[in-house]
Image (tube, rainbow, N blue to C red):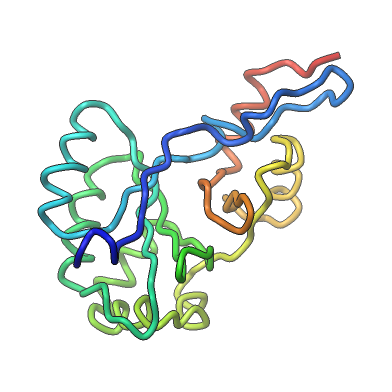
Length: 195
């Protein structure tokens, strides 16, 4: 797969970097509540020469995403397994995100995805390539998302009320990162509200 076809990028900046006025009395959604480290899915050489050395230098990539372009068969089960087997060694690797032509479609816990791929192999790769999100939802894909403009408290309330453990954070429909309930709770406890 060429670099252009795998139009995936690393996201290394915090979410919600806009300033908060005293009147708002809120905390923006930003790291560590949001998991912004996203690994591009490319060939094995890219994994070995770019991603793994960056991990060894201390970067934490929490999310591997697949940007499918149906009907193109970009992803193959053997390469998916290579990536997840390498990334699964790190406790910071938590999520898989699904995009179609750059647009967010859903996310899945890495452990659920690994089980799905090990069980279904080539079929799972076909679901990703063809954008079969109904089938991916049956396998455990979540679709909940919030706009980047939401505050940490609003995101926490959403997660508490929906009983979701995490939510995708989007900006103009594009995935920025995944915010976990525990990460946001830690962020809220760590920072006092402005009065």
